[in-house]
Image 1 (cartoon, rainbow, N blue to C red):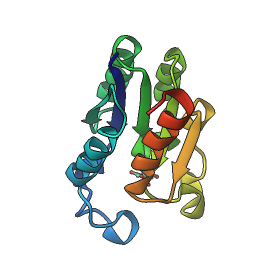
Image 2 (image 1 turned 45 degrees about the vertical axis):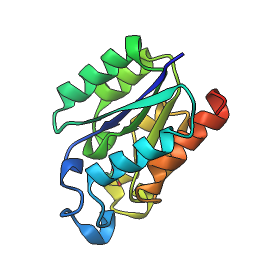
Image 3 (image 1 turned 30 degrees about the vertical axis):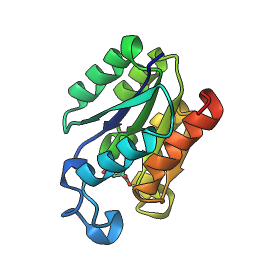
Image 4 (image 1 turned 135 degrees about the horizontal axis):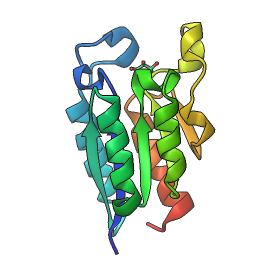
Length: 148
Ligand code: DQA
């Protein structure tokens, strides 16, 4: 059985590696995708699809696609974390596990980053661990929801 995990990344994450490196580090989104691809090899029968868009509409489209195609969603909604009721609503339609990931610790930054709409639906929130947060998300899904 194929256990498909959608890893969905929001706006400006395509510029990781040249974006506020003091906050987000030196790794590119491609590096993070590679780490996730390596990690998923440990989990027999599981695979990832890795997405990024700067458009809220496209992110919602992938969440809709996940309804039929994915077992779980890992999402870093980036700036939309703090603004998007529409992304929260889309995630509420999805029945599987949802993990929210942030590279930085959004609770330790500007006031406007402290609130996350998505956290209301997330089964787990991982923040402040850099790219390792994505790996932790896959480990969480494996330990909690399927056997490796
Ligand atoms: C982020 C945190 C958000 O506040 C910010 O808008 C981002 C990235 C993170 O991964 O730390 O774009 O989601």
